[in-house]
Length: 139
Image 1 (cartoon, rainbow, N blue to C red):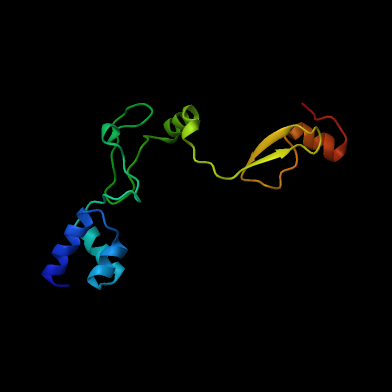
Image 2: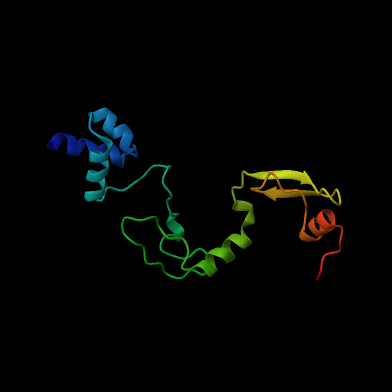
């Protein structure tokens, strides 16, 4: 790779272009462009990659504790699993759930939503026991 290509890669990467677009425009293999960017620590500025908002950069979203970021890996947003679970439990409106199925229970007929399971038949375990075995559920 000549010096002119290296300079063009840096310019295009800072503009936010992907490895593929840079490689196609310079007639280079994508792996060459990617490894050059990694070796020279060229930042990623496009929307495809996950970025941490500037006001929360380096802090846990839940407790505000300072985070130690690992180089060359996805930026951390939480200090531990407990904070991550607490934050997502409090911000359920931000979940991007696409596999929600609206169904009605085979036993009681009550409508319910099933996430990720389009073959579910019952709204709860008690209805499953009653519908499948004709018994009351043990408690």
